[in-house]
Amino acid sequence: MSPKTNEQSLNERLAARGFRSTSQREHVYRVLMQERNHPTAEQVFMRAKKGMPDISMATVYNCLDTLVKSGLVREVNVDPAAMRYCPNMTDHCHFYCDACGGVFDIDFVLNASCSGMALPKGFKPSAYELSIHGACPKCAKK
Amino acid sequence: MSPKTNEQSLNERLAARGFRSTSQREHVYRVLMQERNHPTAEQVFMRAKKGMPDISMATVYNCLDTLVKSGLVREVNVDPAAMRYCPNMTDHCHFYCDACGGVFDIDFVLNASCSGMALPKGFKPSAYELSIHGACPKCAKK
DNA sequence: CTATATGCAAATAGTTTGCCTGTTA
DNA sequence: TAACAGGCAAACTATTTGCATATAG
View 1 (cartoon, rainbow over the protein chains, first blue to last red):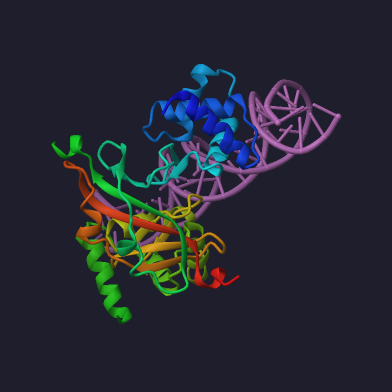
View 2: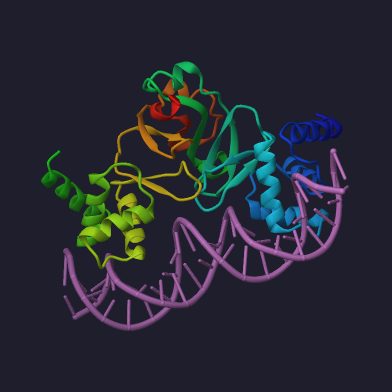
């Protein structure tokens, strides 16, 4: 993925939902793509300020919301304290390390044989989120 | 399950973790068992006040925390806005209806063939939580 | 040009904390 | 009778809102 491809995809995606392309939205998206460790909104804010000192917290929340609505970013909710954001839109789930607090992407598709069999008639699922808690490889060694 | 069996189990469970049995804890647990629709802490508080008008919000949070630590109640985190609580400790996941906001228990066990295959070496899982978003039978009809 | 987005600060919601009093084992 | 738990109110954190200004299309 070249940066240019990402920018194009960003603009297209925003436009597709009727959102304007702004420097703040591009910047927040770039911040998320740069360091993909599932930052909280607060962490995104602090990183975003480095390259754009005048950006405000409210704008970061607005941008994140817009990016989520445009399908470019996904909300992750492993930690009850604060929402975390992830620009990886492929099917995957999240592993939350209870020892170090880290969040890891796990490639994993809940296929029909797993997810469909016990869902009672009438329920129409639109999204699955699987969170796994435990110890990451580094913490498990101790 | 008779009420007496539950009380015994409650006291035993609390004692097993070194917690005392108090009327507030028993009451909060009874509230959760009575109407199992995954209430928020606020909703538990309002229901608890009916039979115990002097109970405080902080005590409700304390009791919920104690019950969770005793393995009698589980935290459910489908809705980012507020934590929800569920006294159903059997293996199941939660279906969150985006239309009406309801939370439904779905009997579902993530068995080894589903959950184990893609987890990279080194990760030691301790708990899984699967949340499904979509429309419940009632809302899907519209 | 005009609808939409930003920046700021104040407001809100959920949850936690401190401190003193009450209760359990 | 200690250690633990509850009540109350204030504090804290994450997020949202209102409003005036700026900007994209």
